[in-house]
Length: 331
Image 1 (cartoon, rainbow, N blue to C red):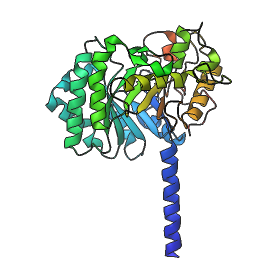
Image 2: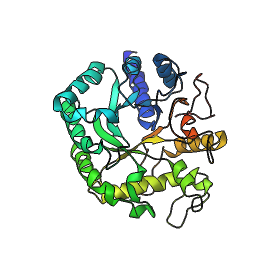
Image 3: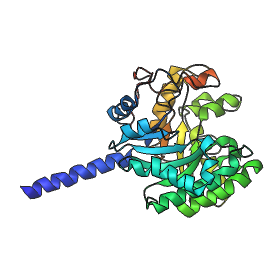
Image 4: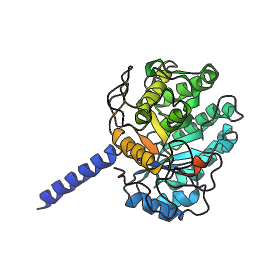
């Protein structure tokens, strides 16, 4: 009898492992709203919807507290305005002690040192040093096997993106990104990239069809691509190859579609995009066919205090009252 129970226990464990291992979808949580649920209610919503990964843009201790023991994988962000202070090694050690070691029962998988830092900006000079210092602090805590340190880029760093195989970082970005890629290679870390077919489509409608942006195009185009997401992602892979990062994996740290507020922003288009992306992420791209694609949807909630264009306040998968905008499943 005990051997049968043991066998059942092993089977259940392996099924659970397969399920969590196969899940490639996370959701970004931003708190730029004055009407959002409590931190505990947010984590409970992730659990009830089967969302096994979360991206945090800053080390908010309220949400870290709520994530304790949840088994939800976390991308923990270092805000851009903290980068300069982390060029000091002791400050980086203090940061890791306060927000990582103190939350040993929170499943932190990646630390994103900065988000969409642009070459030439004030913060750009601090990124590499902050990456190195956070990495040293993670290694000193003996956590380098479970937590990878990286930074999140946007696609403005790509100078040439089409055809995807010709993808290359722009001349202005090259000097900035090369040493960062070298750091990633040396530490076995992925590159985090925010990938938005929506913005590419809106900026180039004369050459890009809506069906290509929404994963609904029938057949492939002249360079073998059926959707814009793969084309963008593979152009970044091609760019990485050209700066010594052939073995660097990309984690799609943001991707989303707004439900209102601008061109092609509608509930119908957003539902199509998110639903198809969740499905698509189970596989790979033409350049990297072995999936799944580790992907974080942007974002959990509509955030009414986000600045910028009106669309910025309409990327939520959920409304602030926790009702779901789209009929989609997250796994």
